[in-house]
Length: 245
Image (cartoon, rainbow, N blue to C red; front, side, top):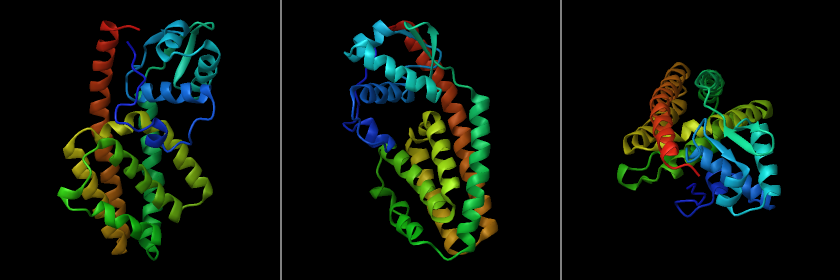
């Protein structure tokens, strides 16, 4: 059966930086979206409204509204009138394009960061990302949130509102696969080391060095995510075949 609970005691709003839901439909939307992000509702899997309504313990009215919002966001597709919905298969070529866009946007921002006096916002990031190994949080969800905030702070400090809006939209689109980069202690440790190194070259005003490091940082993440995405899609599809709602 589908499990719409939050495993670590925090709401998915906290994990995604969203405001608290004000209506039942918003809560249903949040829970469904988190299940999609967690691969508990795997790509390509179909669900009836009756099945989802029972699993969520809600009526069809808020459920349908939530599903239509998810459809608009590109996460689900209506495949049977009002009664059947499918989680959209992951278009890996689409995510590759988004990662290409992310690289070029962040290169521009990080080069600007290295060529200007250090912003207070970036200085404030150093304490966390330079924590000794024994003091670093082991929880992948927390590190994923911190990582998102890290990259956003640089765009906010040295970009403009249009760039920040583009970055936020981009981040929301790739979050479903990007959080896979924080499932192993090795990748969490590497993220701390790479972020600390990025901040160091910014403080050294090394424009060429920061471009090389941000390209390497994002590309390493992309390769790992690509590998894990295939792995999780395989596991999720197998589990869905064994345990259909």
